[in-house]
Length: 174
Image 1: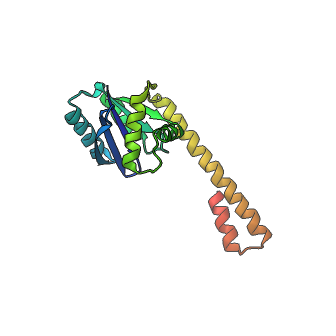
Image 2: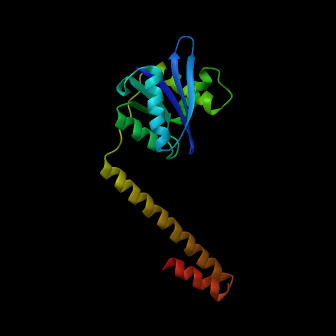
Image 3: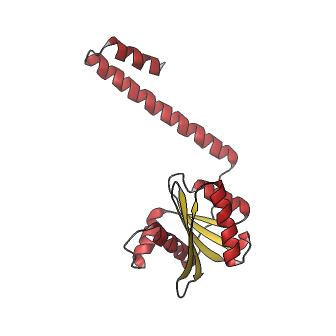
């Protein structure tokens, strides 16, 4: 399996293919974190490694939600996807003596982390589970917003705010 590390951010994917683990020879490239960039990433990996998707292993860090689109894309393409806890990757990087952080260096550490030991492959949750989690997340956000507005309403009443402010808060709560 070819080891690839991808440092994911909102707008870009810093990719590192670990060509030779013993000498730490790598091949790196940056892609946009969008649909076209993900397709270009897969094409580039296949051309560089001369391997099919199922012979590629990719290590990503769980970065908010930004890693999800590339993880799903690569998984659907047949790539072996691994998603690591950022703390574990950071500690591994420290064990290599890596103190400075750049996106390129992070992608190298991710590739070496994948190559260093066996990792559990990432498998996406069922569509129904993702759907329910999204609904629960939305419900939690709404509950939080309602509580904030109730707090604002209480504060406005205590401070005897203008009628316009109280009407505005009431409208938002409705």
